[in-house]
Amino acid sequence: MVRANPAPGEFCFDILIEDADGRNLRIESTRDLNTARERLPALAEQYPGTRLLLRSRITRDILAQTDGY
Image (cartoon, rainbow, N blue to C red; front, side, top):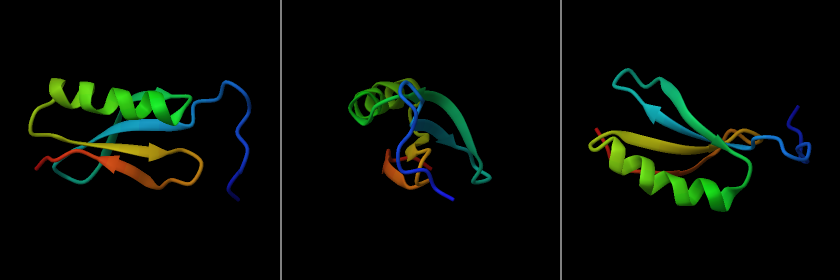
């Protein structure tokens, strides 16, 4: 069952590296979408050529991704 309303202060978004085998490795978690969207390009600069994903913990949807492999 998917929770519609996270607890206050709960991390809701993950920024992940998608490795060559398709596994997702969490780099960072944030509480709000704006912060996650700001962090994604900054982290992508640290990992050039690697696909980073922004995923909702609540819905498990991929909300954004960078170019990569």
